[in-house]
Length: 170
Image (cartoon, rainbow, N blue to C red; front, side, top):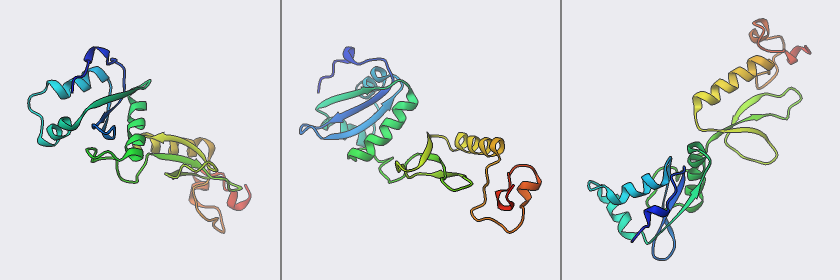
């Protein structure tokens, strides 16, 4: 296959390798599409799996994104949608986590991977550390309840000033 590397942008995005039937066989992401795609065809020390994949590549498509993070999210969604033969990672059913504000009388902020339209979601979070930091900070600032069921009396979190104690009508 001949690729005109001069037509590839230097932008972040995703690239899709297709076989002769037009089926997507590999999806990748890049901070610089031109640099990443050309590296496949200029490196001499490729592993056998990559050599086998490149021998089947007949065409290339790419999607430009605004950032590397957007490319990461797009790659994840495309791999789950198309299940390319040569993508091993990200084929599982796991997805990035969101924070959900529950629709209870006294809402909680919980972790969710279900992207239902009926939920109020914030995210997606690609980093568990940043997700946990947002969740902790939000709970602390708004003093949201964290208990699943209401206890019969005020909990320790209320005594520490980090919960508004809806369980005792505060």
